[in-house]
Amino acid sequence: MSNLPCICNPAFVTISGANYPYSQFFGTILGECVYSPRQFAAEIIGLLSIVGFAVSFVPQVWHSYQRKSVQGLTFSFFLLLAAGDMVTLLGTFLTQQFATQKWLAVLFGVESVILGVQFTYYSMIYPRLVQWQKSRNAAHTVPQTDSSQEALAASSQQPQSGPQTVSMAASLIPMALAAGVALARRAVSSPTATSILTTMSALESAPLCDATPELSVAAHTAGWVTAWISAGIFLVSRIGQIRTNYKLKSSAGMSLWFVLMLFSSNVMYSLSVF
Image 1 (cartoon, rainbow, N blue to C red):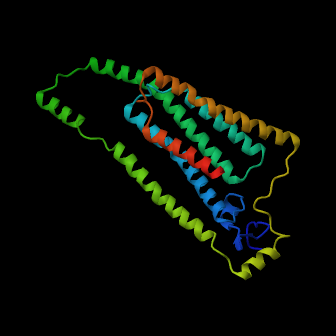
Image 2 (tube, helix red, strand yellow):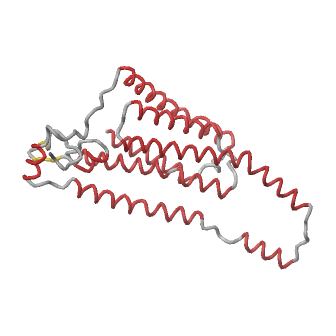
Image 3 (cartoon, rainbow, N blue to C red):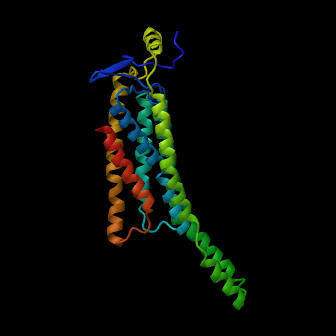
């Protein structure tokens, strides 16, 4: 019996006269058999895109929180994002995807729900709270002295630490990604001949890392349908927001970091596929 959680068959491939063993890291965590440097680069770029998608919503949440407003944003954008994530989540369970993919789908779904809840709060609840607070303060108005007005003006001119915080967080992302690359490189380091022989002897007993689950025709069809529905939802989800920005001639409601991170993540995902 092997101590490895799973194995890849073959244990290594030969490309241009060089032998490349599979990566136990990618096999165990992602359920994929990765051998060559090109495959390794594609997986790393794909992981970077996932990280970008996972944290991209944070700048938008912070941006709306600072503005205390979602003016300029379209509710259909966040609604369709949430719908697409929910359909994707359903598809991962219907097709019995790897646990990592299921948890990622759950994470994206939670992020979409957070964005939707924040939109609802600042568009429907917060304005009423502000109006109620103004009405309450109007009944107990106390004239302000010159010193209190100067103190209020001084406090309003103090710089906010929000953008700096977001910038600092963004600057930490490359360092975290570099650490992940170093860890992955260590995981794919060439094993000894003994470890290769041990792995090959366990082929009949250990599960395959990239084993495809046996699905019924109905489950396979349902997974295929949900994948296309999810892709269609994500494709049209941006249209409403683009129209809103065009009508307002402004994109003040959108966080620049949110847009840049989504764009870069999509670019990296496309590169990982090719």
